[in-house]
Amino acid sequence: MDPFTLDTGATAWILVSASLVLLMTPGLSLFYGGMVRARTVLNMMLMSFSAMAVVALAWTVAGYSIAFGDDIGGLLGSPFQFAGLAGTDEQSLLAGSGVPFLVAAGFQMTFAIITVALISGAIADRVRFGTWMAFSALWVLVCYAPMAHMVWGGGLLSADGPFAAIAEPVDFAGGTVVHINAGIAGLVLAIIVGPRLGFGKDPMKPHNLPLVMLGAALLWFGWFGFNAGSAGTADGTAGLAWVNTTVATAGAMLGWMLVERIRDKHVTSLGAASGIVAGLVAITPAAAAVNPLGAIALGAVAGICCALAVSLKHRIGLDDSLDVVGVHLVGGLVGTVLIGLFAVEGGLLFGGGLSLLAVQALVALAAMGFSGIVTLVIALLLKHTLGWRLDPEDEQTGIDIVQHAEAGYDLVGASVRRRSPVPVDIPAAPATATATPGEHR
Image 1 (cartoon, rainbow, N blue to C red):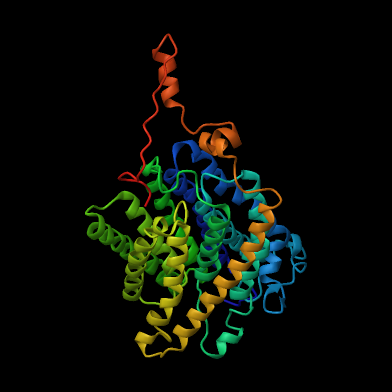
Image 2: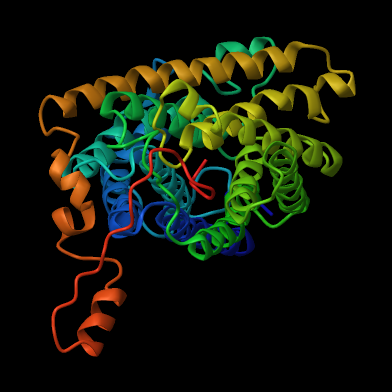
């Protein structure tokens, strides 16, 4: 079909894929919400839902234009070219795609939303909700959109950039733009904000593992829109991405479970769910570059590496609450760099030499450096203006009550009120000085 004529099949594919990717953020809210303590579950879920609102507006006003407008110095697109998604009507096509401009812009919006939401897991249980919302708006415009431009919009890290003289960089659906970007941001925020009260001393167990499993299932389902949708139409490339997404995730889940079995002598539902996410992260940049056997190998490596990485945070004193660094940064690095080994075209194991491997590593380092510096500036600005941390007393009470005047669960209190004619005190569970079995990592 003429790429300058409306392609209704491709348009339908992108609309469905965008809807699947949008579903990933509520899925993430369940995944993250189940992993925190009961007194902060609503805040954790609201951090994801608020990202949907804030980022959708920021992306419409200027984000898309910064990401995909005419190149300015290889770092960003013209911020006014598509400001407000104006200058087009509903029938205007994205050049050469056969897909309406607004459909393509909406699809990209969902990627921006989930990327911002991912970061929230690194700072769970301890930050002001208003500061998080301000961060979401600033970060998507100043960090995410320029990174998307550099990789997908013709900037420095794209096939039109300087690294392409060595080998053409590969990031099919967001290894650098989404996962390395979010992982580094999570690392910077965890350092700037500091650890939760009692980190490393008090048990901080996930309060609802079935919720975690449900969230992982929705993420896996939505991720087909993420990867297969990035093919742009329902074709063989989309089919390859779909199959690779499935088998890489399976390999990663088994890899994580194997580490648990050897290291801890048991396999956990939390580990299985985390392995699912690790595999999804790792295959994202490589979904159309590797064959299914390569995808299985890549997923298994990611599952093993991420399982080992998340166990380091207590040793180094980094309170990355829900393992954004251990899963998204490490998984994103594994997937991005190992393209240089497993890519059917240009990969070292397929006779392509070291060129693609070197470029993938350089692109990953450049993405880490850019995201780290920009996030640090935003984090420090907000620290000295709005402030990140709750008061210690409020953090101990719980964000849900203090920041939102709500509680996720009131089942015990309701039961006591129904059954007892007189007030009854519920004794608190004794605090322990060490982590207990089932504590998150």
